[in-house]
Amino acid sequence: MERFELLKAVAVPLDESNVDTDQICPARLIRVFAEPGRHDDVFMHDRRFDEDGSARPTFVLNRPVYAGARIIVAQRNFGVGSSREAAVMAMSAAGFRAVVAESFGDIFVNNCLKNGLLPVQLAAPEVDALRESLHREVGAIVTIDLVAQTVTGPEGRSIAFAIGALRKRCLLAGLDDLSLTERHRDSIDDFERAYRAELPWLIPEPQRNPPP
Image 1 (tube, rainbow, N blue to C red):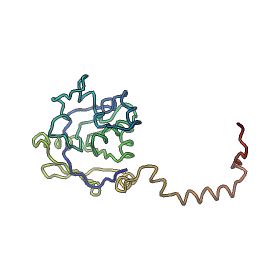
Image 2: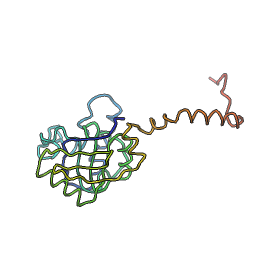
Image 3: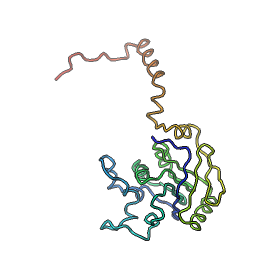
Image 4: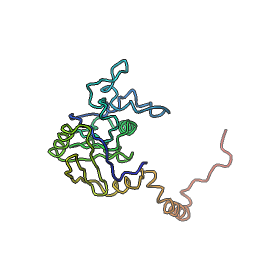
């Protein structure tokens, strides 16, 4: 997992609430992440493209000024709906590393943190003010400092945000759940050896000649 420390990037103001996971990654496109190839057009596909595949110029994410954006600033209830992890994978494939909103779907937050994408929850007035500043200065840079736990808008005002200590440590070190567990490999091996020695009758013997 890619480490997250300091992100300075163009931010997209998305003036919408209740952007659910089926909008973020349509159900029929989930399977593409099991296959090699381009995935950067999955994110909000049905909002961004017409049936013939042409981009909709009126949709904010298709504006050229946001081509390299890495941050989304939305309203409330971003990522609600089904628990599909592919929603986060679609955002990451499109280049996004963080999303700022008033509130999120609970499972979406967990999926973000396990895949190196930072969900930043701020109070509604703070989110609204940040989006308004991005409308005034189109294509502006927003800075998210995970170490300091602050979001700084284009006007230079910093806003503090909260994050759990363990999740913060994992993001800073680039550790997903598997990598975090691997760091305790020696302790796990020691436990298994002691367990087998103390309770050998609970450990089934391997079959020498398994049936055909």
